[in-house]
Amino acid sequence: MPSQIRTTPNTRSARRIVAITAAAIAVAATLTSCSASGSASGTTTLEFQTAQSADSPLLAALTTATKQFEKKNPSIKVDLKTGGNDYESQIKVRLAANNPPDLWATHGWSLDRYSSFLAPLQDESWAKHFNKVLDPAMKNDEGQFFALPVDTAVSGLIVNETVLQKAGVTADSITDWDSFMTASDKVAKSGATPLTLAGSKDGSAGNVVDWLAPGAFSDAQLASFGKGDFQKPAYQKILDVLEQFRTKGWINPDYSSATGDDMAKALAENRAAFALSSNSLIAQAQEYAPDADLQFVPVPALNGSKPYLIGGENTAFGAAAKGAHLTEAKKYLAFLATPAVDAKLAESTGSLPGLTNVTADLGSLAPSYEQWVTPNDVPLRPYFDRVSLPNGMWNTVVTTADSVVAGQSSPSASTSKVASDFSTLYKKTK
Image (cartoon, rainbow, N blue to C red; front, side, top):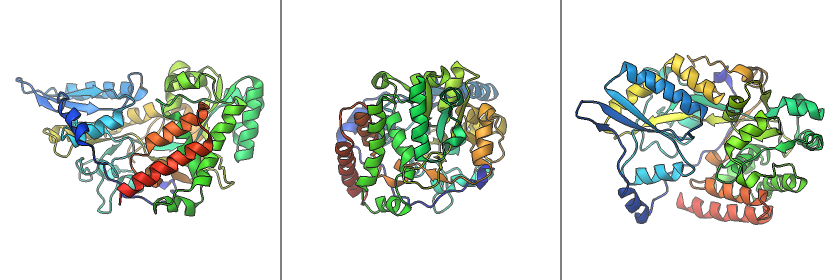
């Protein structure tokens, strides 16, 4: 069961919102306030920054749930806002300007980045169902947590069974790095693309780093990041993989212009075999092809250690601690936490629910969960950038990996850039 998923030890660097310059604050001050408002009729409108694209299955599920909530609570309206590639920076600017939305998606950072701005939720009626597997990622030392965990991220290497079968490969045969490379070679020879990725604006190249890092570093090396010691040789091995896939032609040729939606279509249309992404990509692909035979398997480790899954905080929503309508915001979160509603939200992401009293229909992904998650035999490793890198590093991780895939930079040069930014940002946390 989800609460039994085994997590590996990790160090957690104390992170704080990086100070926003006065110029950024000035920009924020010019923004029209979209925070909670009331009308003459007594209706309260809550602004909810969802971080979702307009075509997101999760946004569709949220829209349905919100209509149900508004019908039951006619005095409260919820304005669902979509999120662009600059979502993270926009939230930072809003917080720096003391103009937070009433509710926002915490994208994995409810504790380390946003907890000082969010209302604690551990005393809410639904909090007793909080999945304990999320404790290390979402709770502080006092047992407080600051966002409703809609789901629990458990992801691996996404595989297209149809493409693999055509190439003469089975997903279960991918048990280590050598077998993964052999499978990729066979896929390429069959005419399909081994690995589907999208350009830098999507961030999928950065996901490759996040997914491969736990198997590229030893536990001691991972711990050293928290002490300010960047492990250049091991990090470069990850970028060497991207370089190898690029030179072999194992990445989709339209990479630079491709979007996350294009990745989903490539899987749906049986043009690609693998993806290193969350399971929401599978849900998105099956919007195009409901019968697409997509599963996930553990990620093979670069260093020869045991294969693993990736997980932690995924989809989670928090309420502004000093919001003008915090009571209404908490009421909305409580509605989203009801089993029937949370089940639909979790199903839309293809993930396990974040609350233990919720049972979601995982549909076509049920076999993957039953094989790799339920037995509790496969270690669940945290997202590398969240536990090992200082705040503000994600953009560097993405752009440097993107430069390698695009052939604009070598793995060595890109690694040096990551190391330099790591050193600069780590010093700011001290």
